[in-house]
Length: 185
Image (tube, rainbow, N blue to C red; front, side):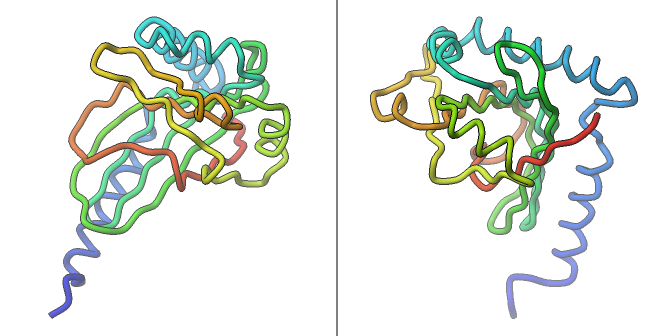
């Protein structure tokens, strides 16, 4: 018998429906509430990961997604909303969506920031109808001491991702394969 049954598909579908219904707490206050969450996420990143501040100062634009909710039971998904800032001023709002399939169970929430290190990478992101994080992205991972190290290979990357503030139980959090789409909050 195959490992995929109608029961597993229904349970996974229920988990995804629950994920969609949670709404990430954005509610009806739209842009103002999202900008406040982005400010908090930016400040948390600067305070808790000292290496991030230097990278942030060199970035030509930063997309902050302050709350991503991810859940999965064989089929999984993630959703969050954020703001793209240039010179620390919001210029656009984006949703981040991700779908996955495989051996997975659990749910978690986390924040992430995409730092565009070149004008070209920022222009490509802004010009796309739906940009997917892929091969041009490098991760700056925090160590146990709380500093997010940026190595020589990372500094040459057009886009650097910081994933932080994880809470919940699911193995790993990545942004590769995440699709970013411009929205109106």
